[in-house]
Structure formats: structure tokens, C-alpha cells
Length: 221
Image: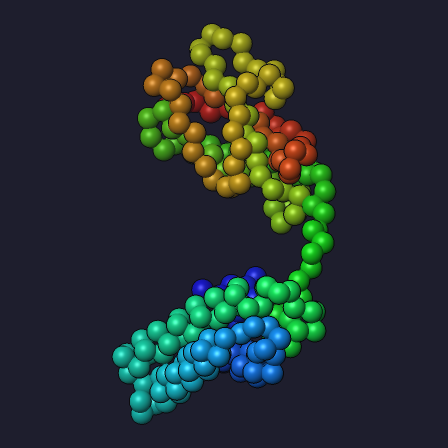
């Protein structure tokens, strides 16, 4: 399914327009890009089938639940084929930027975007799930979740029994796990029920660590 980050247009008219561009450009560059004739023929056929199905589904006199379903099936087939077509013939050999633009695609940028050192500060909010389980939810204290430096979260924690000395700061936490999810689950041992878990989080990005979040605690069910 198309998304705002996808190269394939979200609308069906846009998908047909892109297919038209591909057929036109690839007919001219078929030999240069080693595109087999049957593949280009199939793209043309699928494009025609999808266009006909769309017209039928949009027409007030021919629009029925069956026509709508057939239209979806035709576009599913077209877009699946276009994704495979792009992978097979547009990536090897590499195309020039002007070629990508002519196909309605974004030129390839081989230079990775530097993401930098994480500066955001996060904490966890806990909630009950079941016996010996706590759900955790990442909460941003400082900074934005959209910052590209925020690749994932190192959740540090320690379990403390009643009467034991709790950790004074995050540096005293002993266990950890890494997650890229903003919601996750920690399963504790059977004997940890009734004890207190202490948490703190650092954002991590390829070995680079952000500042500690505040130390928080929760009773293990």
C-alpha cells in the first residue's frame, strides 16, 4: 500500500500516469536498460486493464460492488508488477538522475544523511499487563521523536526487593535491553512479584548515546 514516503503515487490516476511514463521511456530505452520485450508488454497490458477497470468502477451505470473489487484487484496487480519492474530494471545498471526524473522517481542519493548525536531526553511510563509483566511507553521529556538521531532506546533497569537500597542514579542500574519501539514489555522473574523496578532510558544511535532520562520506579505485579 502506498504511503506518503513511498515512491508510488497514492492515487490511482497518479499510478496510471506513472505507468504511462514508464511505458513511454522504457520503449525508448529498452535496449540500453536490457528490458525484455515480454516484461514491457505485460506492464502495458496491466496498465490497460487497470485503466478500464477504473473507468467501469467510476461510471454510475456500471459501478457495482463487483466492479469495485475488480478495480482494486487490477490496481493491486499493476502496482505489484511495477514494484518488481523497478527492482529488476531500474536499479541495475544504475540510471542517471535524469533517467529517474523522467520515470517520476526521486534520484538516488548515495550520501548517507548524518544523524548526529542524540540530544533528546526520554523517560518511561509503566502500565500493568499481567503477572510479572510491565508495559512501558516511551515519553519524550526534551526533544522531538522526529529527530533522525533518535534511532532507538536503551532501557536500563534494576529490581529491588523490599528493604534493599534503591539505586541513587541511573548509573547504578544493572540490566538493559535495546528497542526501537515506543511501547514494549518487560517480563520479570516469578520471584520478582512485589518488588520494585527502577528504570532510566538513554537514546542510542550507532553507539552514540544521549543524556539520561529521569530515574522512575514501578511495583512489579
